[in-house]
Length: 360
Image 1 (tube, helix red, strand yellow):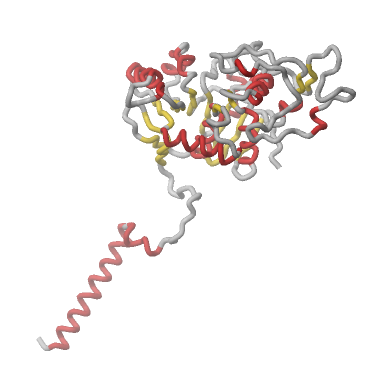
Image 2: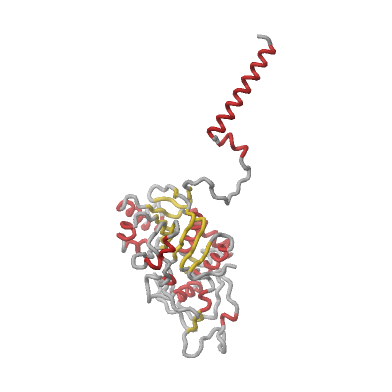
């Protein structure tokens, strides 16, 4: 065959192979073929457009340590354990959300009209695991479709050394095959600490602060949910309208509030990042520096609300929040956390319902 003929044959063969390659790529949608056609700078905040399960690497299953894999939720109801839920009548609305997130041992039985029946995920403190065991048939036998995510640090949660709380979770998975139990990874716990520091300017450990279950629940919800409605959580300004002139009378739990039983001073909130309220909120008319009128231990614009809706008559919500916020060490910073949530709600699809917050 002459040279021009060979050249023509080579050209025809090359063209044929190229055409076949392009057709195969288009048919199979191979990622390495389509990569040059995709946006080289995709948004890191965009959610996947194709439905499918996501891997949440901050949560590892008990006992195999695999990451949490599940579909994201289009709408989430985050239900607080606050006494604010009593008489709300929001149960049906809460159950209408695609996913319902609850905290610690907050029950649904007997409170369905106010808090709903469904529980998709339950975020639990390592210290609350024993409280769940008191009614294990309700939490682990009847509510088998609930996914439990337990947070905690230290030796009790240590997997390698078989910490006490981890051993309890391990035993539960053996008692109830199919029970879904996950724990926050050490890396995720450190991330939550870092978020607190970034938002408040205070190191959590150095400031003597414990993060609350509400904090971990909101972090998880921001990962999992496209839209979030929070029920029963008061704003950071709610308890500022309650002025106390006497000691905060609380029964310490496990010694945690021992240092908080001190004489209440004019409002010093802001020790962990929450700005102090204006002076007009601090002082009663005709009194000095937040002193209460004669014969009245305090004046409040809100009725007394139990700290937990299922523990009526035990602890007052605002008293608990104030005592923790003012305690120098070993305390939750509930009010500071809520100030952070308020800032998040200005940038993310978060709505606070009953009571409603002003996020503008």
